[in-house]
Image (cartoon, rainbow, N blue to C red; front, side, top):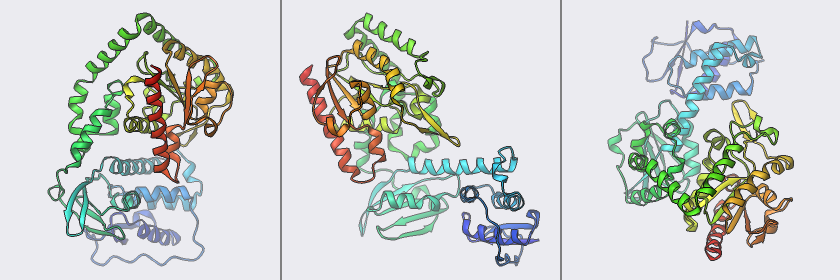
Amino acid sequence: MRAVRLAASDDFEGWRDAARALAMIRVAPEEVVWQVAGEADLFEAPAPAPPALPGAFSVPRAFLELAEAVVCHRDPERFALLYAFLCRLRDRPRAMEDGADPLLRRLELMAKAVRRDMHKMRAFLRFREVADDGGPRYVAWFEPEHHIVRANAGFFVRRFASMRWSILTPHLSLHWDGAMLTEGPGASKAEAPDGDPAEAVWKTYYAAIFNPARVKVGAMLKEMPRKYWKNMPETALVPQLLKGAQARETEMVAAAAARVGDNVGKSWASIRDEAMGCTRCELYKCGTQTVFGEGPLDARIVFVGEQPGDQEDLAGKPFVGPAGQLLDRALIDAGVDRKRTYVTNAVKHFKFVRRGKRRIHDKPDGGEIAACRWWLQQELALIKPPLTVALGATAARALFGKVVTISGLRGRPHELPEGGETWVTVHPSFLLRVRDDKEAEYARFVEDLRTIGKRAKALA
């Protein structure tokens, strides 16, 4: 029996080196006990792992990525399970391709749980400002389910490089002084601040952008479980906002119907229902459902995007994913009332390519844009907006009926072939992808929206 003692609960390098050496001399998985320093030891003096031998076998990169994630799981058997699968890879180099292998499936589920926990830490951790001898410091409290704190450290260093911050968790704390990252012992929630003056401003902003028409309680709780609510100031508002969401949505729909008349509302509903069964192009076989436009039928501005994304395809609503959230924020910064605009897409089905379990956006082609243009024309004919905005080149192509460039049309009004004024700007997803001058590009986008908002008021 051999015992391997690792330096920490997430010691991937230590496990990798020991596992490689043990596998080379064919030590059976059941003959190895994996221990973590500081935890209960089964042996007084564990036998050290043998040195690595020349001629080591290779493993797929996918296994190393899997192992890096699994090592962070809280399951005490994680090191043994990984070593058992490593021995299997040694004898069967293509074992990673066996999707029916129960051990591989268990490891993949563990890795998925770790990656989800890392995402939750990035999404739901909230810094609060305190003062110390060095000036402002931002402190956050988080309770991870797995050993992910060190694995997530690089994200927070890159994201908040100019801030002095501390992240406190029950088993480990991280401290960044603007130049160096250090670790400290675990802490308690009592050591983290309860709030700061900026939270009142944030709550006001959150309440302003809360859109009752987009509320899907089940999906929200799935992505943001209640266990994380206590760490976020805006969640104190959620019960009250949800309570009034249905009444607010009914009020908005009724008000829109009164303004535009029942006939227009019935016509729009009829076209939307017909679009749900659209087979005008092959994309209906790809997406989950048709994603039709949404908003008041007397809107001053109609925003036209490219196509629904992954989240929009699942929710059945346009602009609810990351790009939609960025658009909401930019509209607030531009002083444009989001609730008084109509949003839709040039293409109503999600076109994607599958990479593993992920669905990656794939740009629609000219035939697909042309096939879907009929639905867009019906929306615009009913709403008759004073101003239509093309978000991106695909939307502009659908509106103008030909290929155009954003740079050639941006910043000034244009007449559509069917009449009406159109403006062209970038799609919010462009701002999510851009790396250089991200702040300047966002500011330019907000300025476009501000100009569009003023022009829509003038036309109305």
